[in-house]
Image (tube, helix red, strand yellow):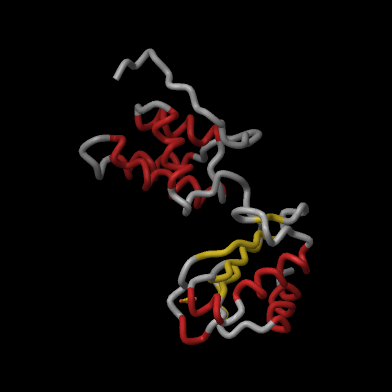
Length: 177
Ligand code: FES
């Protein structure tokens, strides 16, 4: 690879004002890199660590990671945009994930998702995660959460809910302070 040539990024990610990597995160990343024969092999682990710190991955985070791993920003960018577990924009304080795989789809997942979107002023038909303007909630569909017998199921951050009625959905939103 020609180290002086920089591959252009087609659609740079959202910018993060004041992006700065805390010393503890940098130390964690430095340590992670030692587990791999090549720095670039640590890419996914480093991105997970960054996302855990900031909640999402910005353009500045991509550039910082590329520099750290001695690759081009496009090499990091393509991972962030390929893997759905990486968040290329800020998420809400509360992340509501509604399972839409077969059992849950048959059990009312689409109606449940629509209910959340209607209640929170989001577009139920838009593609991907939708976040409220105040940054409090993100609503999205996810695939099977491994509780197919108790459809429809969902998560709100780390809390897991089964057999979620619209009334229960309202209670979940109400309890998000
Ligand atoms: S289909 Fe929803 S948990 Fe499996």
